[in-house]
Length: 113
Image (cartoon, rainbow, N blue to C red; front, top):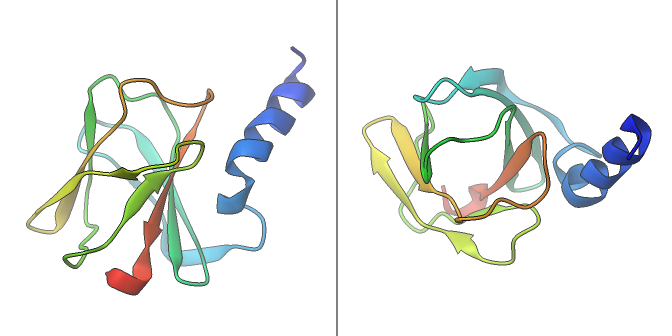
């Protein structure tokens, strides 16, 4: 697959976190595991883009406080992910198999957070 085709496939799955979004209160961050992050927002959603593949079944996003009842999903998956707040960080349990390749986009419903 050519680079352009791979980019098109990635955007087809994850474009919601790119198109029509604007910067969040911070543009970048890092997980406790060292994966670089980028943040965008649109409407009532925050998008957390993981710029690398997680090596563990969960990740911890530093300095992301959510309220009880917030929902997190992974673009390309049709189910909510489990998460736990630890102080000002949030630990998110990932599916056993991640959809797609290269970078993964978490969708956080900000209405509940």
